[in-house]
Length: 493
Image 1 (tube, rainbow, N blue to C red):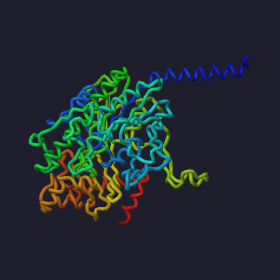
Image 2 (tube, rainbow, N blue to C red; image 1 turned 120 degrees about the vertical axis):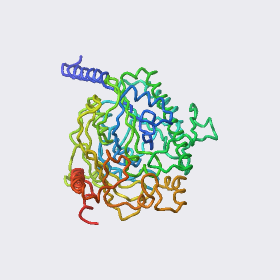
Image 3 (tube, rainbow, N blue to C red; image 1 turned 180 degrees about the vertical axis):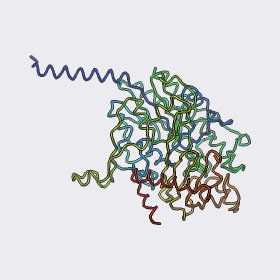
Image 4 (cartoon, rainbow, N blue to C red; image 1 turned 30 degrees about the horizontal axis):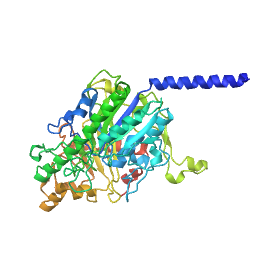
């Protein structure tokens, strides 16, 4: 016969299990969609040429954020912020994780998938992860079979549906990351495979006439630019087709009405002037949030950065945020001494939840937001820190003595090679000269309300000396609070 003590234990465990089941039933599912090198070239963000009906539909049924920013326009560092809520100089992912570049974050970072798993979610990644070490951003499942380098988002959506339908009573967190519209292995190749129309099974190619492309002001209007943008737009439309298939999968699995969807990008277009810079085309990005509990649809102009994503998702899912995230040097991991465990202080996420902001079109939002870039490829040392405060943005080019470096795919692109062949350093490349694009001043101060294209640097203007000083002080304070090693550069070099 079972003892009373054992019976009480079983009753306690059963009650706990039932409570967990009930809590799980009330939990929202979350799908985070992260595009690769997608700027605001979407119909819902005002592009009159690109065809993105599925993303536009998602925006119409949700909230389209108009002032959303990545904190660094580089793939791995940006994704590390998306998954940690910490700027990359604090989570350790200073540059690209793959191949010869081999950057990796701190082993002690407590990433979003780990936090979601600990809260009772089942987690799955489909497509690009691109942060290291992989176990720091560990998902329980990966479903990458047949996705053709994450260029076939239709197959990715099929894999998502199969995973969602697996027998598991827990709420789910799906991280859905196509490679589109990243530039492909060639200089003008976005992996479109137009010579093989059936290459991506289930995907119907949407082709664009270069003559009908609207060239943005940050690029020169030249034939090679139009051809490149036409290829880029085709890749965007392929990404959009995958979003349509994913939406259909959520409907078919009866999870459209209990799933929060966030759609964003890691950084701006893979074209010189955007990706790897802290100029607006590189960091001012799309963010669409569809929360079925939010009855309001439309826009939200709150200032948001990717450091805000983790705390926002945790609040949406009613998961208590950890009191702090301990980040310590990799070499201290595994040591037993108290000295080693106190290698760095404990501090909260660098972002904050924007969940309440979504309820209004113009929420009270007077915060400052910060940006931190150090590397892209290992050969591209060019640390920059920036702050946006009100209408002004200050960029500190810490290594301003160096010419601005280029990612290999951007340098090899027809857009840039034709620029070099023209051998005209004083000629405008978009809104600035080729010479000033390559050799930048220590400080760049822009009035984004009066000068959204960032044409006029106000840093040397006596009229704006007080603004420059104030933003420099804000930047130094941010670096000190987030334990930025490049804080020392204010004092020497």
